[in-house]
Image (tube, rainbow, N blue to C red; front, side, top):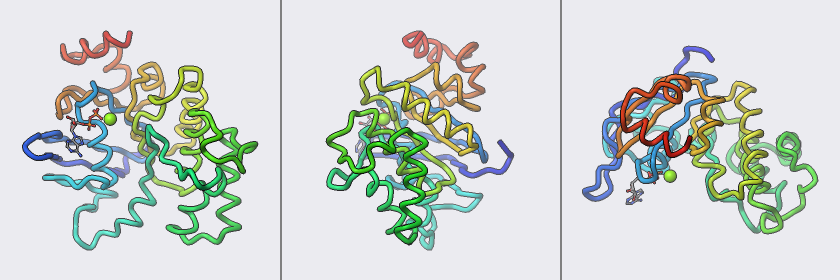
Length: 245
Ligand code: ADP
Ligand code: MG
């Protein structure tokens, strides 16, 4: 991890109608850092990730990528979304494409890589998540865990600078979870910058450099994994974590 800031969130607010879902969120993510966001359902975790990759537009505040606001009118959104990838709880694979094609399509359309190069990259990444035997399979033929490993390979094939994960194992049967977590752990060890929303507390504790606990749209507490999981200061954090111990 270096001190080079990749993502900076400043006084971020997001309102849906009259519901203030995010209130004065401030965050910094350094190059190579793994940041985990924990908190109860409805606390605003997904909305925060979706604002960071601009699937949602913030109501107020700023988000910076390498110190430059991503909210200016001349900002190159396509380029940004290629550099800040996302792995979704519900996989979001293209069901009409096979595994290999799913991992190539973003490379050829967004990055304009030639198909041979895209295929090479896709096969490398599918190998890393142990999905090489399934390159010709359609998503419907895969288990949830296999789909998510394809989702990870697809995201990494784009060579992102930052990868966002929104509860990547929440839709999986318990026996599928470890393979996906292993793939994510391997990625973290490559030095990739990651922002992870998860309820897998042991995993978050193990891989995170920094942990943010969200409660009702605010960051209620944050600190090192050690500080948050072994010595949380706020009662809300303690109450939340008790449910997972
Ligand atoms: P979490 O991921 O922590 O469960 P979310 O960010 O999904 O929380 O949601 C936070 C709150 O924002 C919830 O009350 C949710 O109903 C509301 N919300 C999220 N997205 C929308 C939307 N598109 N329109 C209206 N309300 C939304
Ligand atoms: Mg969510």
